[in-house]
Amino acid sequence: MSSHQHSPLVLGTEPVRKLLAQYAFPAIIAMTAASLYNIVDSIFIGHGIREVGADGISRDVGHLAIAGLALTYPLMNLAAAFGSLVGVGASTLVSIKLGQKDYQSANRVLGNVLVLNIILGVVFSLLCYPFLDSILYFFGASEHTIPYARDFMHIILLGNVVTHMYLGLNAIIRSAGNPHMAMYTTLLSVGVNCLLAPLFIFGFEWGIKGAAWATVIAQIISLGLQIIYLTNPNRVIGFRKGIYRLKKELVNGILSVGLSPFLMNICSCLIVILINRTLKEHDGDVAISAYGIINRIIFLFVMVVMGLNQGMQPIAGYNYGARRIDRVTKVTHLSIRWAVGITLLGTTVCQLFPRFIVGWFTTDLNTIAASVFGMRLVFAVFPIVGFQMVASNFFLSIGKPKIAIFLSLTRQMLFLVPCLLILPLFFQTLGVWLSLPIADSVSAAVTAVMFVRTMRSLKPS
Image 1 (tube, rainbow, N blue to C red):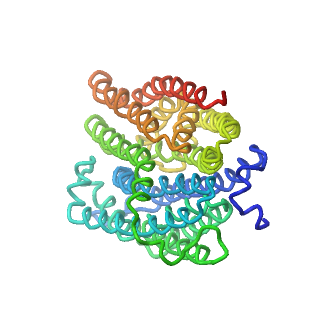
Image 2: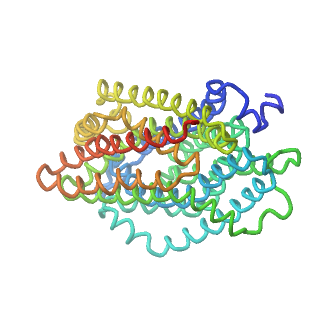
Image 3: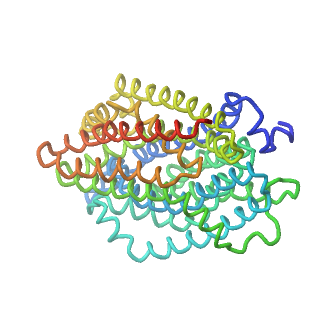
């Protein structure tokens, strides 16, 4: 790709469909690869974790390890919340600054991102370590599953700073006009991960610890590549002297835009805790393991849409900053069509072949039955999730985080939490599975109203 194509200026001149393909496809490939790795990793864990009992017989405990992994999701979401607070806010701000031709401020955003990620990453890990067991028990762990959750999170927390920096810098690189480089760093991380995980899990017999070490090492290698890329003095956005001092106006700008995905992840954390605790109360570790499997499959298609959103964000942000509202509208509508198609594909596959899919993760018959039952219900209205995700990202891309925050909180706190509190009282585990499509349906209607009103207000008079 030529240097002209790497320039952010093309965001305001190239055809929108071509730009979205150029920016979204690398992000989709990277996000899909990362999600597929998470699925493969879970398959390794589901089939590679064995335990020798008091009788000396080795037993397959992969379904318990998957349940332990599912218990780490809230803590992982919490860590991701702080990462997105900085990364998403900074990438949006960079796109807008580039659209305004304010390159100096865009570089200062990069320096502030680096410092903020280091601070937040260190503080988060130091606060979590002393209370890790208590946190995991609160999340729904039992004496059978906590060893796996604890072993995994001990190592992930060691690399938390690396994770924050890696994700933050990738967002900046993408917004600065090089989505392919962002894709390459992600694919490098996934590739190293896929090589190391089976070696550590099976070859070195490290079990679930091996999966965690593979993740951290892979991210360290990719972070090194990002740093090398950003030290090139010819980049529009790169490491410069004098950009690392925290500036109040930039930090406020980053955090105000990043507050929406931060609250989304906090809400996701609370939701997963509530789901795990409710499932444990009614069906125990088997239900938690089933939810862990379903969550991995959902994550695959959600990550594809997130990749699409990452491609849309710099295009919409740049053109909004340049007051090219026609291009903002065009890229948003196109992204919605693609997102609905992606989630519709996910619904079709999971409704037609649920038992085949679940069989990848475990051979435990109870876990398979519980997973198939839950999957059919959770994916019932999944296509509207595609629209919902793009619409929320639209508000972030144009620097209107309050609306995105409102939509996120409405979906998760106003609709989903009451469903999770009330329906299981009458329908037990069935109530948990029903809560998700009900909340998605109602919140999608609210999102549609807000989205249509905002789009009309942006149209040139």
